[in-house]
Length: 523
Image (cartoon, rainbow, N blue to C red; front, side, top):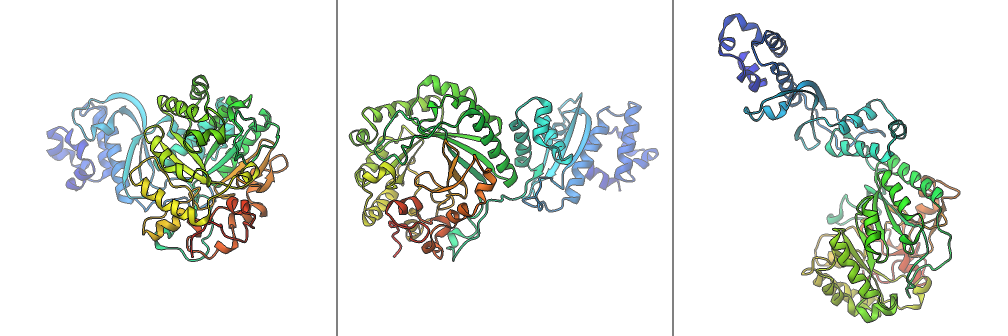
C-alpha cells in the first residue's frame, strides 16, 4: 500500500522525515489515501512536518482523483444552458504557490488563501490553475443560475464585464456552452472538402448603419436615401437586444459600425462605448478620420478592424469617390498602422476598374493588413456603372488567385471564387461571410431608421426594430427566405460555401430567390 500512496502523493512524501517514512508506529499513514491526508494534518499540528504539507497533500489527492475518474468531456453542453465542466474539482488552500511547488522543490510557500481548480478539457488534456476572481464569478453565476444583468446592476458595472467572465471560463474549459443555435441544414451533395463545414455560425454580426450622413458621394453608392440618425435611446435598446440575441443563441456578437460615415453621428462614441459595455466585438466600416478621432475610440477599445475603400488607382478612384480620396486613404492607412489597428481595404469591382485591382494590390502590399473586393451590385447609384461580363469576371478570378500566391494582403471574399478553387483542387473557403451568402444567417444590416435588411447591398427588408425584436426579425419567414437563397443553387454541391450573391443577381434584374448568380461559371 505504501507504494500506491507514494504514487498518489509523490511530492508530499518527499517532505516526510525519514523516521516517519520508516517507523512502524506510523504505519497507519500508509493504509489509504484518506488516512494519509488525515495523518499529515495531525503531524502538521504537532510541527513534525511543514505547516503547508496538509494543503499540498490535498492538492495531490485532487489532482490524482481527476486522472482517476476523468469522464470524457463533451465539446458542448447537451442542454440549452451553460453548465460546469463535469470533471472540475476544486480545493481551498491556505498556502501558495502550491502548484509551483509540485514541479519545483525550491519554491518556498507563504500563507495566503486561494482556491485551486483542476479539470479536463474535451481533448483529454489535464489542466490546473489558481482560480481567479473572474473564474469564481463565472462559476457562481452558472451554479446559482444568476442573471448577469442583475449581477452587473448589483456590482454597479457594465453587464459586458459579467458576460466576459462567463465567456472566459468557457474558453478555458471550466464551463461548457451549448452549441450555437445559428445552424442550417446542408442542401444537396457536398464535396469532401466542405463536408461538415459552413453550417454553424459561432459569431453573429450586426452591420449597423447608424447614420446616412457621409463626407463622400460615391458614384456606386447603394443608398443615398435621407434617413434620420438612430437616436441614442433607441441605439441603447438595440444594443441590449443584440446582446440578448447573442446570449440566447450561444454565439459571439460583433457590431460593425457603418454609415454613411459613423463618426458623423453625434452620439457615435456613446454607442461605441455602449457596445463595448455589452461585451460585443467592435469593428468600423467608414472613411478616413483624424488622429484625435482614432484616439477617442482607442480610449474605449481597439476595433477588430477598420475598413476603408479604394476603387482603383488614384485617377479612377477619385472619379468614383471624389478628388483627393485616394491620397487621403493612403495617409489614413499610415495612421492605422501607427496606432496598431488592423486595416482593411475594400474595392467594389466594376468593368471600369477590372484592370486596376492587381496593380492596386501591389501598391497596398506594405500599407494594409488585408485587401479584397466585392462585385458591384447595380443598385441605387451603382446602377449607373457597369459590371464585368461573366467571362471577363472568370478570367479575372484566375488572375487574382495567381497574384495572391505572392501577395499576402490579398484575401478571397467573393463566394464564386470557390468554383475556381475546386477546379484547381484547392481547399474551399467560407465565401462572402464564412457561410457562402450569409445574408440573414450570420449577419444582418440595420439602417438608421430601424429597418433590418438581409444584406445592405440591395433592398432586402426582413423587419423593423421599431416594431419587432431582433429575435423575431431573425426567425421571421422573410429572413428564412433569404437564408434559403436561390432555388437554382439549392442542389449545387457548393451551395454552403457559395450560393452566389443575391445582391448581384438582383442588380442584373433577376429574381434572387429563383435564378442563380449571373456570374456563376459552373457549366
